[in-house]
Picture 1 (tube, rainbow, N blue to C red):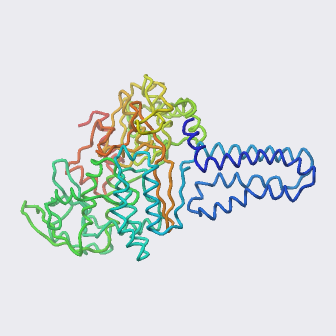
Picture 2: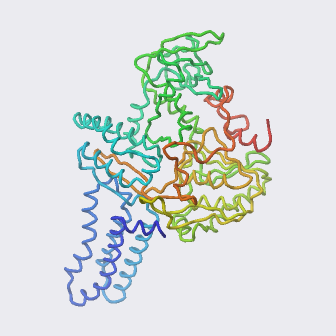
Length: 580
């Protein structure tokens, strides 16, 4: 209930409650006004909320329509009183329908809506909007002290670039600054909200130049070329345009230097700044740095490499257009091809190993919210998951892989319902609370209520750097259960806080940020990395990046194994079934 009360205290929450109160007063006044034949006044009172909603929409614009859709519906419901039908019975029906609908929408809005703290700076200049944005984040971003974010320092550092963007009225330059600022929060819940078309434009600008290859670092410390042209031959209509084969560079070639710098040094200085892709965990970003480095340079770059005979050679690579397509492919490979699949999809991978895909912790909005009222107790969903696993068991399941790769989150209470099947002990789920000068304080505690039906089942939970929010929650809660192995090429994203804040800034851009704290039983933020950026959900098994594995992974035409499953999933199955 704590989050519900926080929602009620926001301007949007109070507005929703105000509409509910208005609807109640109108239901009481309506019979009296009809009796006194005050039809004009009645019509005005019925129309006023709709007029107010129109003004609100004009002020906030369509960018935030999704945030206020329930409020607008609430405001339109009093118009029901203007429908034809006289007498006590029709009036009673209209009053009952209007009041009930407003009440349901109000409760739904307060319980289910994600971003209730909204600030509209869209009519400001770039500079004024940026100043107000940073001031708001300094006051409302719930992990500011945990991550030691210095908003004043960020303001000073980036304000000159914002002023330049405003001078030139350069939306792209402005968005690049915003993307870089949000990157420095190292929080996947802090990001720039963009239209699809403009996001593609920004990605092309930030990806850099295409020199005909990407790169990946192996566990032995060496860096090799991948996604090379023309060997891959999938990113250009002119396979010979880069001529890498003639230079002696192909998939697997070891790269020693990039653009005149030692490859280790160049990788260490590379920041992976890209729309919608943040790196709370430093080690996760380390995996992607070589991929991003391959787009850094001017019209050409000088590359030193080892040829097939072990000789050190140097070549000049010319750029040919944007690196975005090759970057997106390489990024997708490292994220399991970003195949989301159907949520809670399940099937047998072979005669013994079963598969359960969880793309989001969302089952039923109202039931998910209701689990909050029961301190995490969610028997309906626990039984739903149990039935899925029982169906797999009937097909011969002895092992289970739960795939959380690219899981975009939802409700930790859904995560707890799944984890409850794999533990016989009552475990902490999460706490809600606040922070003041004395530290963090818990107002409400929630638990994983044990079911334990499958606590003896060997399980691998597969994660990656895009398993985030409540997906991170599943990784943690499942990882705390016996018999569960947490596995991946990278750790999960390292974020879990409640969304809640959104800032509208000029040119249709927006900034999302978490405003409400989710705490652990140790009274610190749950899961999220602090300023060290160290992963707090350690993997039990990290899939090794050998040269052989990398080449298999990056071979576009053979990225699915003979068993019809991708290399990461195959590795998980082999681990479960004891294959070497």
